[in-house]
Length: 105
Picture 1 (cartoon, rainbow, N blue to C red):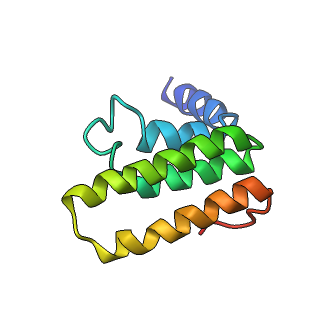
Picture 2: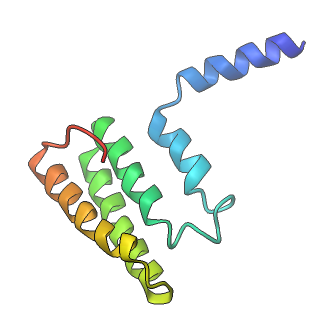
């Protein structure tokens, strides 16, 4: 019985797109209620998964949410690394719009 459950789980997981798995683990409102509004890196990476899954419009939205999350994060933190990451988010937006995003980060 355990073997059957493991097999079924791995079969379902192998056919689930990576962007859905990443969203559930890192950005789901139920599991990540506290951090999802400020987790700019997760939103940025989620935009990458959407982009490589041929969903550029959704990738643009996730990229905007990454910038919003970064802005929210910077309201309560003075993190120079986060400030520098803002440029990377802007660059990813350019890559999405030009359909020329070849690697993350």
